[in-house]
Amino acid sequence: MEEYDDLSAGPTEDGKLDLSHDTWAVFPREITQFSKTLLILDMKNNRLAQVPECISSLTLLKSLDVSLNQIEFIDKGIGRCIRLRSLIVSRNRLESLPSQLSNCVMLEQIIADQNRLTTLPETLMNLIAISMIDVRDNQLISIPLGLCRVPTLNKILCEGNNDLIVAPENMRDETDLLFHCLEMQLKFKEAIATKSSEREELRVRADELRDELHCATNCISELEKDISALDSERPDEYIRQKERVVELVGIASDKIHYYWRLTKDSLFTKTHPEYV
Image 1: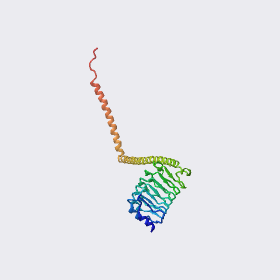
Image 2: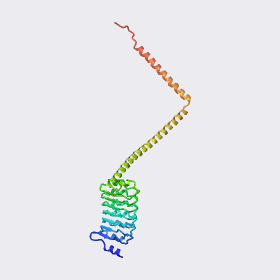
Image 3: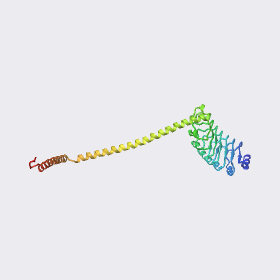
Image 4: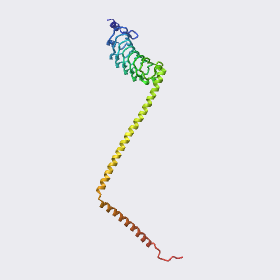
């Protein structure tokens, strides 16, 4: 077949393999034999339904173009293409992108317009070289707020996502305005997170205090029971006798002090006349 003739020829001297505008319905595993020479793979305008796990063996790949296909799935193995700089998946049937794209640390552009994307991976915020993301004409509801703080990212194209809630429609075609909307929402989210954290700390402390109060209440209850038990164990006669003993001890003490004063006075009273 003609497409296999193109494949068997292998990459050109500059590392490019062109399998575009053909009838490929399955991603050919035979491509993996070029893992040490393949830099640019062009498979646009075919009938591919997925990018399978074997993509992970193309570790030298710099550019992948699989636009104008019927792709519904990209395997997480694409995260092993750590030298990938350009990913073009326009005009497919993708509902999501793999979070492992964040492992492609050299990735500079993601072109994913005209798909069925509803969200983007939060991990895209970890791409340190990304400069452009094109997600126009999808079904996005939200995009990661933190993208506005990626220093290398200077353009996000997101027009045509009617249900996108992070920015008004008239602010989506200007990246600066879009970034402003994302930044304001991110600050609000951070403030809410801080308040939530403080509230959680207060809730935990309140639970601790409630437990301490419960323990204290139990201790008081036990002490009251012990007091009641002691009261019931001591007969009234014992209590009266004890009070009588205390009273007698007090009387005796008073008499001892009284007689001591009398004795002291008698010992030191002058018995001789005072000479002038």
